[in-house]
Image (cartoon, helix red, strand yellow):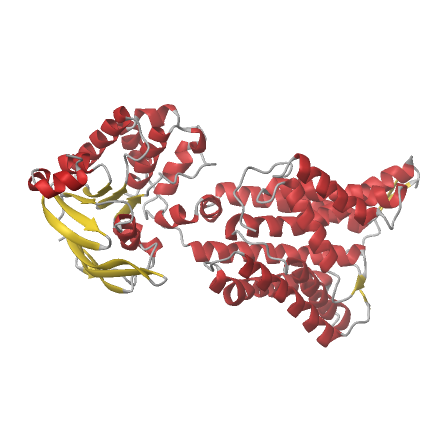
Length: 234
Length: 295
């Protein structure tokens, strides 16, 4: 297992956000985490990245528990996140944002990675000197993904990549996720757009108010009546 | 006419000191997102350290300044670590602001306890008497020239540091989005510590220049320049490094010209009046961007 979450419990003050969830992501998989607003999806990703400290539980990455590893050291280990709302550095240019993505890399020769990213996102190349805050939502999403890929991660955590984007842009973003995955990056995808997520994922977990209620192959979940009613609007 | 130029040069000099202090204010605000109201008192601490090492122990002033820079840097790091960091994620941003005011009173009263309330006479760290222009009609003191030169040097060095070094880039990233910066692998705590270190070192340098130009030293020496530098930082656009410089110089020139041509009693009122006027027209200051709240 590349990533294994065991009994993860997170509190915000007195409110229990995650009630001891367990799940795993194998190398080479796309795993989706779906659920309603406030179910704990973002909290899960933030805890894996180290932005939030869990009260209890373990996060095994390549077999080592990283719960005590400071958040800023986890990128260098191979865990990159594309946060909800893109969170690009608004006053930096596209290229400066990408360089920040390589901050954790020990080898300072990241120009080949940058050319690869420009190949994957031609729009970013065109706008390499533009200030990131002036990009459109879709372009910012691509920048945020490109920035995360600059660290050459083993696993990419994506938090609501389709949020606020036009349907055409949503398709484009999912195409990119697919191609990043084909190039060998494992993906843990958090999405409210359950249909899109289940279409792309190998396996999925359903999160409800801090607990995992359903899990299984994405295809099975797509055909599960309860899931169809609750998350696919049928 | 010559008196106007004399005032202008003096204004530039005072403004340069405000600018150096304002740089510390503005960097800490931009990166740690807090107003360190004790910043002015770091200046006073720097002045007393130089006073002790130079006037009392008779060390060369450059050595005394270096000692002050080192000790003020340590003071800044320590203050951040024990007084501010534990409150960084407090529910209200007022908690750390009030703590900063507490640190300010603490430092002033420590100085009062150690050195007493009487005014110490500070010996200028710049022995050079300066130059005379236009057949002696325009006298420019050595400390004035040195002050202006040093402030420009500091501004240039900071701009290069922030834009060209890895640590500087980390500072920019933290100032724009702390969470995203951490996701990039930036050690946010270390970056904020470094910011305090730089700001406090600058406060010590500002102290040496301030006390050389205005050589009477009391525990409250740093308070008023600290507040004026804060005004300068807001005027220039808080969070902006060039803004702090522009705000500082503007404020210094206005203050000295008001003192010379209007009234020395009214000078401070004019300075703060201008702050109010500018903030009404341009709430984010001269070079400020639209940043969201956070006191």
